[in-house]
Image 1 (cartoon, rainbow, N blue to C red):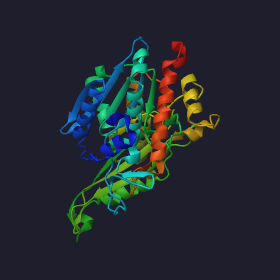
Image 2: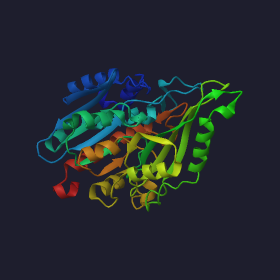
Image 3: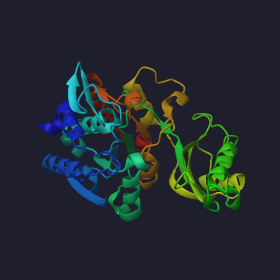
Length: 380
């Protein structure tokens, strides 16, 4: 059966082109919906744009406890301009499966689907399982946000959540938040030969960007460290012989617990003065208690370094958990997947086959542990 073979399934998933933008996750979501339905899952498809689909699949359990959940995103980033050494659509060479999305994060999706299919009967005896497969994660968790904003009723409270992002099968307990803002500066246009008659918006934007180099987003967090700020893009002007009257630049702040995004935005407005700021992405940080019983057991199952500094178990990037955790009751959350974090978004992206197989075993052990809980208290 395809769904119980993680290597074959990963190759199949990588073969679907889901580069975002534009995403086009529909074909892949419908393929998985058919396979999962045939395997006994209840399946719900949720549209959030042309060619865009989210997929929720569940196995209901015999008891009324909240189920364990898995989430992963179907979209990928672009291949990039650099030529790949291997075909980017699932070629296997020397124990590595190559392709865009192999590590980030179609191998993770294949691994947790395989584990859930293998343990289907056991899950039915317990509290069941929920799979939330989204589109649009790479561009700010668009698919997850669409579910919450338009069909929050599709999401059930979860007892625990696993995010299958690439971690080389190491259990992580959190990630930074993200506040993306667009800054707009207005000037006055004029002929390029008479710049004194205009007001150059590029000069004004450049001054603003330099002021951001001294801006402190907030205090450091004991576990996640310092927040960061980066100006990622700047665009202005229409032609070389005109004074530009409009320039836009993008601000990417990665936040830590304790930073209020609304207050931070107002601080930035005061710091920048004449710059108009508008929101692009607003995602809170996610941080689970490392002493939570379930989290501690997952860490112990994944590696012998369970007593490691919690700071070494958090990451800078964001995940759909930023949206899904609040929407499902703030369950203890772990980021855990077979992909190589150093290969995400890179040329010749790959996932090691041994890690992929190990992930299925890890997810299986976590599912067996979940079903064997004796009290609701242990799950929370």
